[in-house]
Length: 304
Image (cartoon, rainbow, N blue to C red; front, top):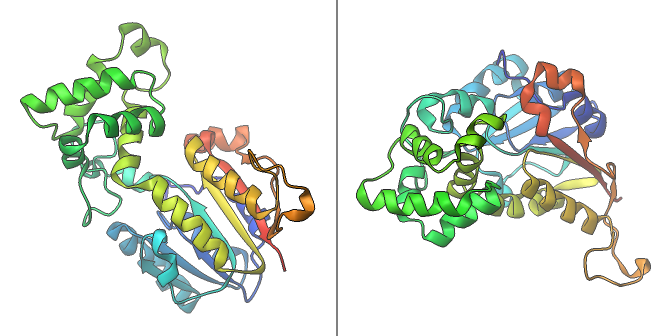
């Protein structure tokens, strides 16, 4: 796990407050950094989930080190209702693609180098990005690029994908990256600090893995699995992910929502917000771990 540092680790521990004898759920195991952090903070039990078969292999070292205090299930957190353990004293989500997945070139998440265009968090299930791009409607392409990727050139790139796939399929990360570059004005290629393909790759990845729908299922299921006074922490890297958490957290805390003009005493209060605004990485952490730059952490405590 060297080189793969869990983001916002100090802040997460401060809000999660692991206690001896507690039961905690890490819904996004990834490289195991957060699970390890919780296990080292208290004499507790951590249950970890991840749909990626590669994560299951990485979990073996924690089983060997912590024994019965650590359990791993290969599972998408959208299926939390099928989890036998619980209720939990604390639950953690760290949304998005893991550093391991980005660094493993043949998974197709990164445009740096050439690899099969896959992008699946579980490569044994669902459509690859190549298959999705071959079959997605123009509207689906636009939603992925504009809404999920927040790409300014979404229309031009969507049109280019439709035109290109009519001639030959987009099969590799280089195929897609080169196509996006061809749609990017020269001035943007040199002015922007990020690669022109970054946002499009992000949007397509989110669409391929149904990430927004999974979060909309997983967060309410997690809240139901919390014990009274249990804590829920959510780390997000994308405005859509953070918006879902923000809306749900405010709803559970009995806060007003757009269009809701009811008096406060008519709203059900199921939780207390521990973060009015999301916690962000410090300059010190960003200097060590650039991935933490866009991370936002929201936390709440379930009512008694």
